[in-house]
Amino acid sequence: MRISAAVTATVTTTVIALFAAASPAVTVVGAQGADAHHAAAASRPDLIVFITVDQMRPDYLTRFLPQLTGGLGRLYRGGAVFTNAFQDHAITETAPGHSETMSGRFPVHNGIAMNSAGVNDTTVTLVNAPGPGASPARFRGTTLTDWIRAADPDSRSLSVSRKDRGAILPIGRSRSPVFWYATNGTFTTSTYYATSLPEWLDAYNATHRPASFTGMTWNLLLPAADYPEPDSVPIENGGKDFVFPHVISSDTARALAALASYPWMDQLTLEAALAGVRAMKLGAGPHTDLLAISLSATDYIGHTYGPDSREQHDQILRLDRALGAFMDSLYAIHGNQNIVFALTADHAVAPYPSQHVVDPNAGATYVDVGPRVAEVRASLQALGVQKNAFAFSDGVVMIDRAALAAAHVDADSLVLAFRDTILKVPGVRRADRIRDLVHADTVHDDVARRWLHMFDSDSVYALVVTLTPYSYWGRAGGSAEHGSPYDYDAHVPMIFYGAPFKPGKYAERARVVDMAPTLARVVGVTPLEKIDGRTLTAAVR
Ligand SMILES: [Zn+2]
Image (cartoon, rainbow, N blue to C red; front, side, top):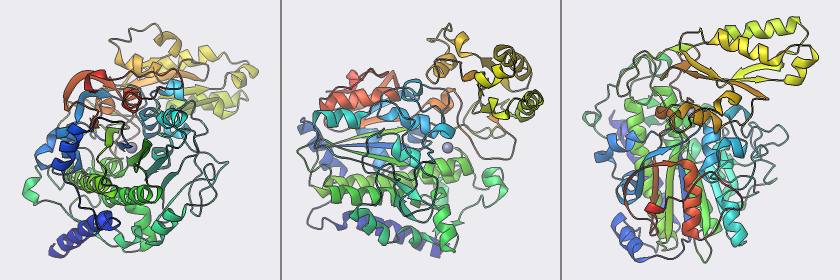
């Protein structure tokens, strides 16, 4: 145990040293200095830093607030905090969540409805790294990056994430510097953007920082008595390795592939972003530059151990510390205080159906409709219809109307018959056609509204299926999950921090699509197209 604690301490020191290394002459500015300057400055920001935490529930901020002494605590205490903010769409997954952050448009308008049809693109490859090709080919329209660049072509942007979709979608279609982590331990991009990496990223990759975590131990940051959660909870991590300390593989290749599930991944993502900020001189003025960062460790750890685990508590504390060091470093790099931070999440998460700690999730169950789907596909195949003419994923029935018509199968009758069947499955609450939902009361029926923010026609997406609250798709024994249209998955943190914003807690209802127009307002640019969000004027000075 003593050895583990020492290892942890060394890692933290190394990271902070690395953050400060490039500007030895500049003193790191603390929270108070930065805040004082915020009050004085009122000019256009030199840098917007848009941080998306993957799978972050807003109650982590309040649950752990007394222990949040780093960046999360600083943003929460000193920022404009929207406490009723939502990813107001039904399929609360990473790709649709990130598609809204800087576009101001719902998936129905930006084209990114689900992870499985997100950034995956077999026509491109990664640069000097293994892994699936990824691009914004399905993304439609523009983002804050394009709006700023239309007003000032010399504005630069940079996006860095663990995940391809977390890096790509906030930026949209522009061929900006967009980088994500590949499991060989390097940050890379795809041939959609470039055929080689910039010198600064090659240099960062050459430090082999990810490999330095091989064999490391993840121990608690604080004394065990500071964590009210039980540590030994066998439902976590599929029943294996669910008690601290957690030791990453001592085999380098395995450790590099597993790093995403350890808090260190967020530190590495922030380090790579900071290397880019220095090399590109982002925020040095006189332009407004943009830095998008998506931090994924919270998602992996949340899936593995659940939102009520001691592991997730510790991850949030470590994220808080890493963000604090990162903010200090940004302020120090150019000696520049004119930075705006925005923070949200792509989605939140539900507890395991069998675990009842914080959420009112009694009655939650697992729902497996696989056999019902297989029956339909088998009957269609018997009629000579290719089996993909009827598919089910993420709660959505997708049909190929042309293929069904060619086999003289009436698509609408097929869909309605499947609806009757699936509504009898325990745990299924409703199954709607988009053509019926357009008549729903979208003010009071959150579920209907959120589905309509995904799809506007049922020509392909024939039926959308909603489970009872807190229930999971699939079978028992898997990871903790998100993806439903309910508030526990849709309610996310939303914070704006910096001179243009009035600090305080705002209880008005806000949506993540409101963030891009709000940031556009403080930069003094206008969206290039019709958007779904509105400016949150109450928080803007
Ligand atoms: Zn996830």
